[in-house]
Image (cartoon, rainbow, N blue to C red):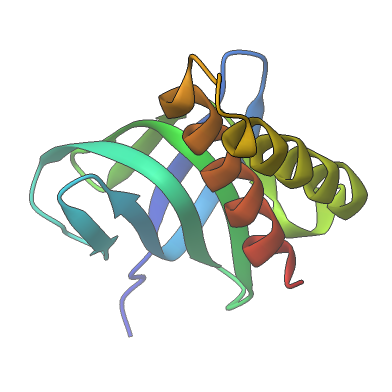
Length: 134
């Protein structure tokens, strides 16, 4: 059977979070979630807050929380340029719970001037908790 893997790089402004061969990659595109397999057509997609799933070359599934970015697919290589990307095992659940609570408190304030920012913070915190499995 021919090798059906492709190269995936998940990069944030501060570090490379993942680099290796994978069998599949799923991401939360702004126009809807999508999956990439070997020999996928070229694609450039905006990524939203959500869960990135990969099936690595050994058949192990990994999950990452992301807060947006862009994914480029070309010639059996995927580059995810993410604002943030945290592996599920690395998520600090206590910190995510605290961020969720702070966002909820800000949204409950009548004089909250930046509701959109508070809602985005809440969505990121909820996503991190979901990906962490809580």
